[in-house]
Length: 246
Image 1 (cartoon, one colour):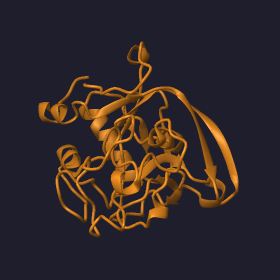
Image 2 (tube, rainbow, N blue to C red):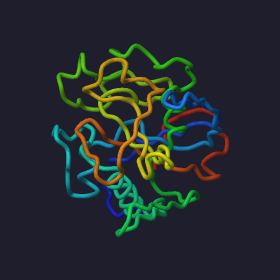
Image 3 (spheres, rainbow, N blue to C red):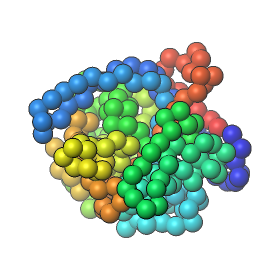
């Protein structure tokens, strides 16, 4: 990669974790359906995007609860996608999203090597990390939720990670995913996963799926996490998660 900022390059060292190929079962309790999806190897950030990283890239911070190591929140899906494109540009990578300035229509280049949001299937697969339950550990040990969050977000990485080294997958902030929820019923609404600091225990499960409007919905318990496609030369010889350095 060609970085425009040495400081940004250093901030992203060891952030992205390569995840192996596999399959994951998804379900939607609203329509009483479940299905299985194949997951290709991909990169996923070990933490939600922090306010420090967001400010470094955009020179702005929309968050309600301020703190460099807290997750950035109170931003729309489109603003998260715009961030991914801007970070890709600063890293010398191909932008994943093609965002229209005049409509809610969003196109993407599935083969682009730039930063993006994970799909719902990728997110669930990463969250479970080979486990089969609704959580990868006891919630009080792995996440910030209503009973332990002190009614606000908390700095990332303070709770226990899952077995693939991913932190804050449940609790702290909900996370935007790339996918449309149900275009026939909800139009352009996008999926959000993971539960947040103000949710009861039942809200913080890998299987929960919610949705909201991609351009107008912003709330103080909703952020996002970076993903990237893995290129062929990055996949060779990699069968399990390990830390990736740019």
